[in-house]
Image 1 (tube, helix red, strand yellow):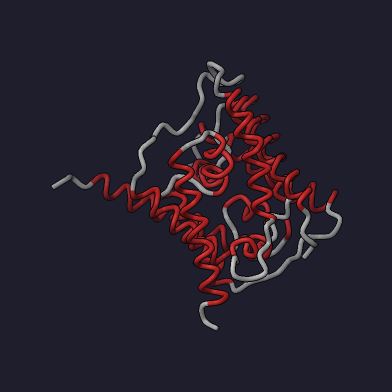
Image 2 (cartoon, one colour):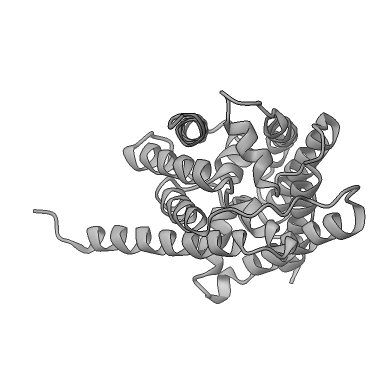
Length: 139
Length: 144
């Protein structure tokens, strides 16, 4: 893993904030990725713009990884079952709670939404608890 | 067309930002969630950088009557806290802690050409559709 770099972290975060601002100012939409996926997979005409966003995500990430990255992102692999189970819970939870790190975090906190603040604090807490149990709970 | 172009540009910025801030590396995210281990503060800087921009910029944007290319802002209107919000966020956090991916980084990590994000996204879409199906069933059921 590359050493900690606070500057690229802040700059990268700033770009994410800029992305959310562009989408809100121009199209009036919230840049929440779970909502983006949920809308995209309805495959209705009104939601096709969400696929453009997802294509953009892949283009932007490729541009960084293969054009600008000083060192390649580590391709660590992990037990497939934890990916499936983790994904299942993330899909279920973000649909039920109306958002993820981007919708509630980046955009919700930016709107000073009380619901989003509660959601962010909740998923940070359960995320940290889960990692604690997995990494330190059995030793 | 304008909305497609806006979404594409916004997506590119978002994806590049996730790459630059190393959020597509799941070990970095898990390092942040591991408060009892060798804590990695990267995610805090990323979220800080992002919210630092939106908290200022959104104030100005939302003062407008409408967005530049649309008739209205599509903003959540619900204000009250309810159980699905908290339970949903809690379940999301558990899955996040297990996999180290949330939806944005999982999609962008597809460009790394590894299977992990693929499996994660299959699970994620399945979980999302299952939750929607159950919620729809409950809604359709007449209240007794």
